[in-house]
Image 1 (cartoon, rainbow, N blue to C red):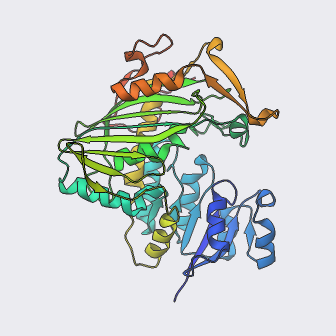
Image 2: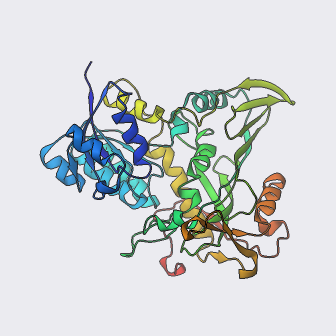
Image 3: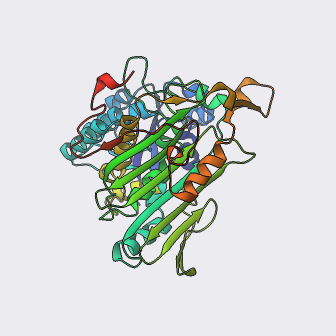
Length: 409
C-alpha cells in the first residue's frame, strides 16, 4: 500500500489532535514527512518526534527546501492559513487547512486562484462536512425530501477563561500588530463549525454552501479584546432562507449551552443537541435519525489522505467554506464599532484563584440570547435595554474586507 507523505504545520493547539493521529499509528496509509512549528519545544509531542527522528522545521519554506509531501495539513493561527496554503500548493502539495479558511473574502479568492494554478486540491477542516451524518442530511435536503428550507437557527454559548485569550497574541483580536486582519471571534473560531454547517447543508451542490445575500449583526464584548466575544446575527441567503446565529464566550449561567440547532423546512424540521444524533421530524413524528456529527473528528484527515491518493473527491473546499468567511466579513461590516457592555453588567467568575482561570460573564445574557433564539429575533428586537442594532449589509458584489476602511477603527 502506497503511503501518503504528509507535512504537519502547527503541532500545538488543535495541531495536537493531528499529531496524536499520526503518532498513534492509527492511519497506516499516512507517513509523517516533517513538522513545521517554530515553538515545537512547547508541544507535548516534542520528545516523541525527536526520538522517532521526524524532521522539524521553523517554517514551511525550510521543509520544502529539502523535502516533499503529497499533503500539507495546516493547523496554524488564522492569519497564516492563506499564505501557508499558497506555499504548500506552489510546492506541489495538496492541502487540508483547518477552519476557518481565513479572515477575509479576498483570502478566499486568493486561495482558490492558487489552488487552480497548482492543479491541486484544498480541503477546509470543518469536520462535520466530512461526516456521514451531515452528508446524509445534505443529500436528503438536496433531494427535496423535506421541502424548501425556510429558517435555520443555531445557538452555542460557551464560557472561555482569561487564559483562552492570553494563549496567543492574536486571541480575540481584529488585527495583528502589523495591521493584517485576524477577525478572531467565537463565530470565526470555536463555533465557526455551526455557522458553516447552516450554510453548507442547504448549499446547491455537495461541495457548495448557500450564499449570503444580506447580513445584520449585533456585536458585543465583555472581555479585554478588540474583536467581539458575543454575536447575534441574521443572514438572508440568495435563495431567501433566513439563518439566525447566536454565540458567546461571555454568557452567564452555571453550564455552557449548545450547540443546539433547529432547521425548518416546508415539510419537516431537523434538530440537534450536543452529543445527540441529528433528528428529522414531520408533524412531530421522527422520520429520520442521523448520527452525531461530532463523532469521528478524524474523518477530514482520512478524506484528505484518500483524496491525495486519488481515491476521493473533496466535499468541503474553499467555495463551500468561504461562505462562512463572507458572513464573518458581513458581521463586521454590519457593526464596525463593537459595543461594550456597561461595567455593572459584567461579573468575574472564578473557578480557581489563578487569573487564567477567571472569566468574564454578562448578567442575564444567556437568558436574553436563549429568548432571541426561541423567538427568532435579535436582542435589539426584543426590547433589551443594552442592545444596539447593526446595519443590514448587502453582500452582493462584495470584493474585499473592509468595503470602506474609513469605517473601521
